[in-house]
Image (cartoon, rainbow, N blue to C red; front, side, top):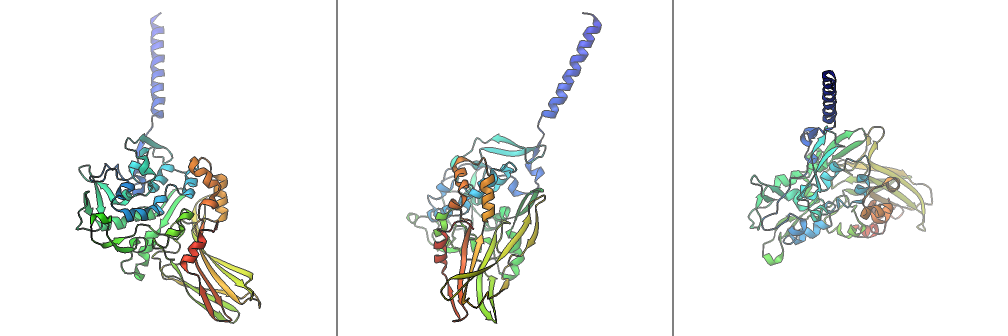
Length: 444
């Protein structure tokens, strides 16, 4: 082989090698840290891996419940404990457009709960999370969803787990640091965030901002005041002989629409009462005026999920109790979701706001009217859409999603009052009776 051919071959190999390296570099992922893509966003990363807690073991709710038995039983009835098994959430998670790792950061927020960890995004794209296996994955803790450790357990500078408490002067078997303010503010990490990922993916939960806006109506109003009502009791099981103290229920009661029909019976014991209240009835000429108020909620009513709303109905009856007409109005947000998600209207009730609904008596046959107020989480039309287009959910959820109305409460009747302008009598249905009825209702 002559020298020219050797040089040619060498140059060809060199060029080819350089080309391969160049192409290879293009194929190598470009990891960008999550905190760089979402600066200052707590929800962008999980709570760091939590080692076993001294005196407790794995930081699971079931282990906390061995001493904090009452609190554990309340938590098991809560929306927080159902945050992963929530059928509507699982349906959303199954969509190809869902950035699953971000959604899970609020629904299973502790690193122990994640089979894979996301610390970086390929080229900063949240649809390309770089997942690495988590050797500390705890499948039991994963199923606990928003578990005790979400708020109450952190890691100190020496790598040891400790509990954040709200009350001092106790002698628990585990390390504890008292920081009630940190516990109160933890709610805002998920419940006070509006973030636009792209034109069609928007998270909008401004409950914390609404609470601050309403501070003029309330003194020292916090999420805890309503959603974790105070109760005098011992924190722990009776056998430990600890005195009763000011504690909080941990059912995390919200709008009165639980994640399972079996949990309706837990709503009132957990502390539920409607935010909306009936102020009074008035009969004027051929009109009925019903006055309602956001009397109890320290935020807009309803709050959180943009699709939640209050549906108010006036149902008219004749002297034989036969329904002859119906009127309805809606209080909530209106959003456009395509081509760009945006809020176009909002007529929710602000804290302490009073409104009158004036309705004309439909005809001479009407002798009484019933007001019904429903807190709607999921409309029938949205429910049908979810069933039709959900694919790929885990088998344990998929079958239930296909029969969503059978398994998943869509709304709750939270107020009912009957008024007869002929007799001037008002008959209000009790809250326990309403929630007994809600157990048997299906759909919106």
